[in-house]
Amino acid sequence: MAMRIGLGDDIHALCEGTGIPLGGVMLPCNRACRAVSDGDVVLHALTDALLGGLALGDIGERYPEAAVAKGEESRRFVAETMALLRERGARVHNVDCTVYLERPRLGGMKTAIRDNLSRLLGIDAGSVGVKAKTAEGFGAVGRGEAVAARVAVLIEVDE
Ligand code: MG
Image (cartoon, rainbow, N blue to C red; front, side, top):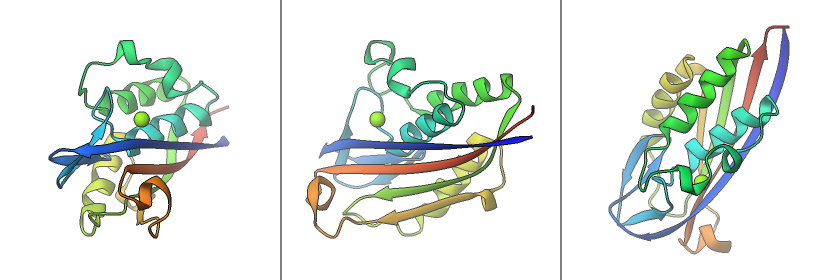
């Protein structure tokens, strides 16, 4: 068995709205993501991490804007990428995510995100790390203009 590491990043601009989707869970607030899809930075970064771990390109190649429905839920990107992994005899060992958002604070929502990601990836919740950070007022995230995520995955591949 071989181990492969994958890394993914994503950022989306925020605008007025009724909530920010993070890892398939809606954070109710007066902001929303500006995106073609639902703009879920956690699921986009996770998709890129899964693709990167197996050197399968990136989310922009596989899902160009023209192939994404307006407001589409991003869980499809993760589900289809997981199918690609399974075809290659690969599975996720563990995943670690950081969400960068100035406000509101994620608080107890981190547990709901962890549980949803564990379902999407077919692994125990104990193998899913979800962390939240502000940007201490710096940059686009710090000014409340954007939300970002970074995800690392470890992938087991049968040889
Ligand atoms: Mg994105």
